[in-house]
Length: 626
Image 1: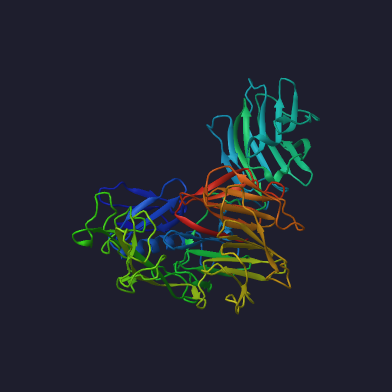
Image 2: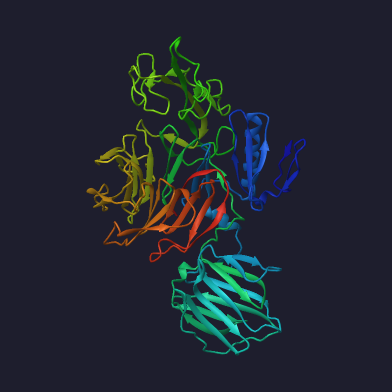
């Protein structure tokens, strides 16, 4: 049983299950986490690292709960219209499409002096204490630290760090034993030249407010409104990722002011738009495309809602998708009965998946929910690699060996593949685009505001879409862009188009201009040593790539003159399964399905310094093009 109210916390009660009372302001997003025949909903909140899981009895209850949750959250955040062109678009494991609109979050974020404000309460925190600055510290940013200086204090420090304590852009160090305040930086294992000009401006046994403001030349440092000094930038302030306070001091609060909305875990909500898509790509003008699991391209029509969710009444249409279920029938030959289902104890199951390690029968293949139906009966697949005989069988010496179409004298096993097609039918704000099936997609705008759409087809050919605009979001026609290699991934930004080949190499499109948006030729860029690339993401003079082992790399030496760059640099931290770049912001999806952002990325430091803001979920794809 559940009840939903937008004025009170939400209370969920299940027999034998712990009661959960939740303030709907803390809800970040809700997703379906169903398995075939097992309807479930996951609710992600600010205060919990793991979702609250709701097990339902029927698909109707599942849809009703999900719809009510979305209705309440949209009412709380006053979301009554389509997502803006600044929205983040993402998809989940089950094909749900969600968006986060920064303009909505901006209206609920605290502001001070026409800047966005984030407060950190440091009461009872152990020293040293570190807090991440998600918008870095570019000119215009301001930071205020309040606290108390005990009488026993000899010195303390406030450090603005780039990723860790090994790189400090600003070190503010009051030294009461020497009656001076030191300003410095730390890089390459060495401290710079100390700046001690000016009075210390504070004393032990007193409270303090230290304000640090970044301008075009450096850092302005004040104490209780009085200037303590100005420190010229020695490191790029845009690479600052965190503040650390050390020493004999009792800090109380940190106030962080930024010109941009501060993307933090609280005060945001990802709403479901409707649809069933594997991938969504958008651009900063507001045109958005998607690709279904069956590789059908779809164009966003501007509405929101689905078959089970209340939304806009206009711009809605029928959206379909297909899923092919497959099972393998395995048999072994014996001298008495010939080929039969009776095998050796170590053989794969009679009915299995393609690997033979998992038992899978026709009866075990069930539909996900009521929005799916069977489109065909089970049938034998004759179009399988290696060929088949007239009955669909493939033969081999043994199951781990290569299968072929002819039953040779030495063959002792055979298999055949059975297929059945399921079809999804629902409602969503999407319009189907022609009959061309796409395996990948990229949207971006150039400096003139023209929308550039590139796609890849199953054979690995690249396509360019003509005349896409806000008025005609579906464009007019496809143009083939020839290539000798099979392409598997493509990405672009401001007429810089990169692709990845099936051979693991990267390819840069040479000669793209405003008058020649298709460019002239592909230039092969060798992958990092011992790596085979599978994905690439492009921003403003910024290129990242992911290899088959989910390791990440960034391209160095990029410029307007040298668009292909010079060499790859490895990003040594954790592995990721998806990359997304928004101009100079790098986002990834972790192997666990969480969204994470890279801090400290600049033109001179394209690799950044650290990951921040982990948003749990079953995310599979992200597109951000502010």
